[in-house]
Length: 449
Ligand code: UDX
Image 1 (cartoon, rainbow, N blue to C red):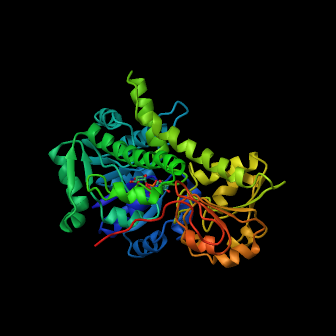
Image 2: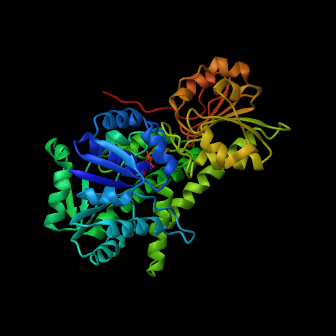
Image 3: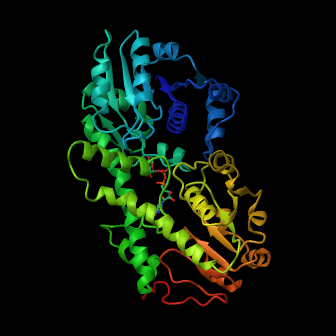
């Protein structure tokens, strides 16, 4: 199938490349001439494991190309995916100007029957508006929603192994086109869920809000766990072993970030309020998320309160490991809060330093590696669970630090090893470990046979 993908951002690039790998002829389109030129030269502007290699393979196989010329790419295509950005609007909803701008250009360029697939995340009701616009074309332009559920860092795997392919539009013709596109995945046993447009749109928002809610839920519980001497990791097992609940997305820490959860939760709240409904539960999700960051910084500041100019080694800037994305990253907020509280912050992140520098400028310093970030630090603050942090030699870390505090914002470090190195280990919702290794309070879960 000949497919045009409008938008070479995160979702567009991953989807376009994977569609080419499924055997389709794909043209990626973007208005950003620099981005297109770099893609044409084989340079990928985002960090996503495996993506560069896959783009090179698919371009070499002549199944994938990039252009700024939307009109001719759309004219040649049977199917046009819309994967442009839908950033948050100042009012708390979604700014859909790029989406409608792209749709108008597609309608203008179309000289024959086509299917327009909305891949961008859009609030419920948007697909219907796009369909109304498309109905004005003299050619039959079918509009379908096909929301993307991929996660950064595992995007290719997620696209190729979808839990579900959601199809919104409900028409037999649209479904037939989507089937043809995803046939190689359907052959492997993955299935399409066919539903109405608004249902497809709300499914995407609902999934993200539910996952964000689970994180905020466990984070709220982690505060109580600390207060009563419980270990949130044991509690997570205790509740996550119930098959009705499950353990996924119940990892306590400094909260969620990224381009989806904060924006989607805010947009749902905004949409409900604008329809005159009160979002009792949804409005608490982000509040709890923000609180988690502030609470964590408060604990760091209490630990270094007797130091005149505290030096903090900030481990991680990305919102999660295996990405260079810092959008809504808790680490960035934490860096700002630490600086405002009078600390000197030296940060290291394997991939997100350039992006962070663009936002934080010289508020903090950027170290070339973990050791340089940590030398002379009064406290290590781990904000992103990159494996390079998890595998550190704690005896070595202890020797280069000035102070003794390690704050694990992702509950990912081996507390015993940190304590054994003579450091104070502080996690989220877990009893602290004193230098020497003895955990205060309760420990782990015992499985009796
Ligand atoms: C998310 C959804 O998972 C994906 O389906 C959707 O398409 C886009 O939004 P992504 O933003 O890439 O994907 O990241 P994800 O892996 O879901 O993590 C989001 C945030 O939650 C990260 O900051 C992560 O550190 C945090 N998180 C995740 C927790 O704090 N605890 C958990 O248990 C899981």
